[in-house]
Amino acid sequence: MKAIILARVSDKKQDSNEAQVTRISDYVRSKGLTPWKTYEIEESSTRGDREKFQEVVKEIQQSKEPIALVVDTVDRLQRSFKELVLLDDLRKAGKLEIHFYRESLIVNQNSNSSDLLRWDMSVMFARSYVLQLSDNVKRKQEQMRRNGEWTGKPPLGYVSVHDAQGKRTDIVPDPSTAHLIEKMFELYATGNYSLKSIRTAITKAGLKSPAGKTLALSMVEHILKNPFYYGEMLSKDKIYPHKYQPIISKELFDRNRRVREGWNKKPFQYAAKPYIFRGLARCATCGCAMSPEMAKGKYVYYSCTNARKDLCATKVYVPEKALLEPVYNVLRTFSGIPQGTIDEVVEGLKQSSESKGLYHSNAIDALQKDYVATQGKIDRLMDLLIDESITKDDYDRKLKELKEKQYDINLQIGDRTRADETYYVTASTVLNLAKNALSLFESSETDEKRALLNYLLQNYVVDGKKPMFTLRSPFDSILSVATQPIGLRDQDSNLEPTPYT
Image (cartoon, rainbow, N blue to C red; front, side, top):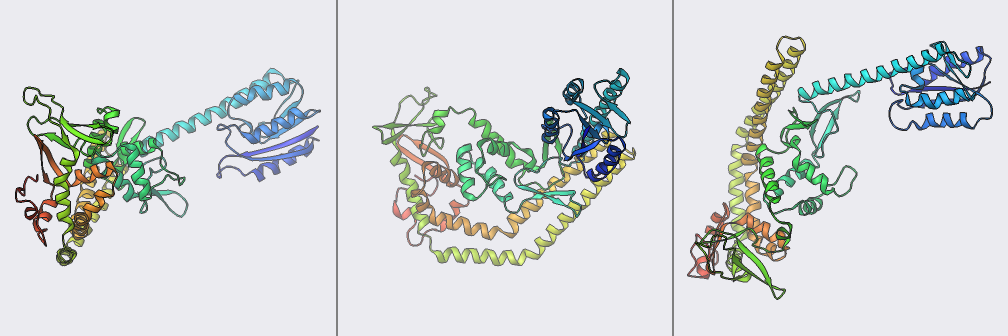
């Protein structure tokens, strides 16, 4: 009888295919079988379609004579009952005789009930082993999650760190993408971006999927909802604090959540209309929103929604051009700031920053050491739990306390880094933004104009037909020094510095 030798491994720790083939080949010769084909398979017996196994079955089905299938053990052939029916049909038809070397079991067309029961029981035990492994993996993963360890692939913006043996030792922010993830949250928190416009902006900035493609909208939404980025991980509908470095603050994440909940309350058609002052301007009399509408297909007018008719019953239509006029006055004033003034201010801030640099560097080093020391306490806490020196409740309470401390330390490090060491760089950016605001505004699309105005202005109200607003800090201070060569008040004697009209 012709024999097919089948060897299979699914794990590098298991007995090699080569060793299995050597044993089985000696057995085949001892039984007087004729070696025909040898299959060395590296695949799981419980996952996927088992393509290589199906090739062996196809060979047996197409053979015109009975085939002896020789394997090392039952679990090298199968670990579930789904293959049993297929193999048993071939056995009953006289096309297949199976030799299980280690079990000293042969089943064929003439096998008695005792041998067939041994086969069934061996498959059952093999399946039981797989289920136990699955349970062990689940318990281990649950313990890892309780210890603040992520068991899956790191989210976009993070990368895994591995040791020499290939074992993951840490998950850290990806230097090439972490800042773009932070930018996504910052943009969305302004309330001026939909998921589509966020994707457009972040794609321009260079963020792509792991496959190098533009992010799907569902991926953008998933990122903005993922608590991993501020220090907690969601798994199996449960939240666990994790031990990895956050990319954003909890406060920024919560701002995004509030914006997202606000978007859900806005009618789609309203949110989609391309009006510059949509959601920015309010009626000075009653406080209701100024509603935009199009006339003759090209002229935009705003009027109070009159939601409170007891305070504001008469509709007054104000052209968008009139609302933009005082804005342009401010932007033109910004554009007149001499570059020498900007350079002088930035240089002074830089020198001040450098004189404090050593102090802030030492402060950050101390915070980082405190973070590492706290992580050491978390690791020792886990050892105490394993040794049953503390209860599970005490472990959870202390772990939460230590993770909150690490979260606070990260916030302090971020605040010091941003505010103390790079504030002069930020000042340069803000000053130059103010100087170039007019050209940026004129060359922008409607959504971008709205975002810029929201960044510069606050409390924009319309009193009758007269618009008024104040500037956000620090642009109000910048405007106060922008008097060279012409200040805002010099352009229009009726304008007051605050509010601007």
